[in-house]
Length: 440
Ligand SMILES: Cc1cc2nc3c(=O)[nH]c(=O)nc-3n(C[C@H](O)[C@H](O)[C@H](O)COP(=O)(O)OP(=O)(O)OC[C@H]3O[C@@H](n4cnc5c(N)ncnc54)[C@H](O)[C@@H]3O)c2cc1C
Image (tube, rainbow, N blue to C red; front, side):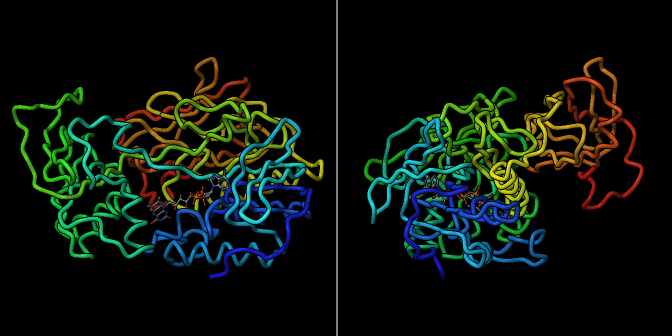
């Protein structure tokens, strides 16, 4: 695999991209398409490609490349494309800080600390996993408790098996994929335990990773204690009531030597906080405009650092916008400022971007709070006027809703705030909307 370009670092760039995952690589190419000439992608790992390098399962790229690829195949394509465009990629390098004048403080194994001048920055640092400490599971602190992504890294990149009998906490996609991966490596999976009354991963992963391998999924159930001195030897699990309180009188024990926690990802925003960017308390990523610009001029963001995406294809689409905008910023051609603030309304946890313009087309990504069957997505103006409504067959918190807003819809609207609601509807959906059902 090609890992990086061999060129020496320059002292100044038009655009510096922090993070060489799929978001960063795509953003760099788009920045060049918009007119930026000198572009640098920085990644702290030995190889660019981000989290995809450890995702050796297939299921990437159906939207972007029209075929199903493995994670490393997708990463390789993204990296090849970047290098073909004569973009500098430096690995084993860490961005320590970006100051008020957008000077990037970079730490590399070869040059130590350098200060690079840049005209625009794209933040694409991805996300990290929540650990056992985030949910405070009681019990001892033995070896054998891993985040699902760490276990994936150990098996797929280093050929190390984490144990022989595992329990998985959380039904996010990484946990589901790892349940199958463990079975394929002959590690018994006693079950996947999910606190919520519904699974948190994509439906295709529930079917392909659990049902096809007869791995039991226990909803509304959690681990209440981890046992073992040097190594995990048992967990206690219990069902929970509607307020998520464990029903300890119904608890039972499971013998295992491995516990994988798959309890969500957190956008990697230490750098954003250091730069004093405003963050959305729900996504924990930066607030962004419709050009993916953050609350500081010339600083753009995309990918999992903004909000957690279900599939990499959407990351690439968002990164193209962020990178293109950074290139336009450098060329002094960034579209005019937004004039509408988007507000998550009933049953909407968040929406990204946070502001839009009535003059352009936008893709808005949102997640609902609750699962609903036939329901209606409504755009509601400040005086409660419904500007637009569309019926959906279902919504599900684990599946991001992509909403295309055309100027034709937005021009009917006058005001500075547009609320998005997703509410249950009595009426059945009037047509078979198929795959496009969530795309307005
Ligand atoms: C286990 C797992 C399974 C998945 N399975 C699928 C699937 O089947 N299909 C699918 O379509 N999607 C899947 N996804 C989702 C997809 O992989 C992610 O959405 C995508 O990789 C996010 O891209 P990103 O570039 O935002 O972040 P990442 O891929 O996380 O890349 C971020 C990069 O930034 C670097 N970085 C961070 N901070 C710094 C710094 N300060 N300086 C330098 N570098 C830095 C990191 O080292 C990393 O390389 C999966 C994700 C995971 C975690």
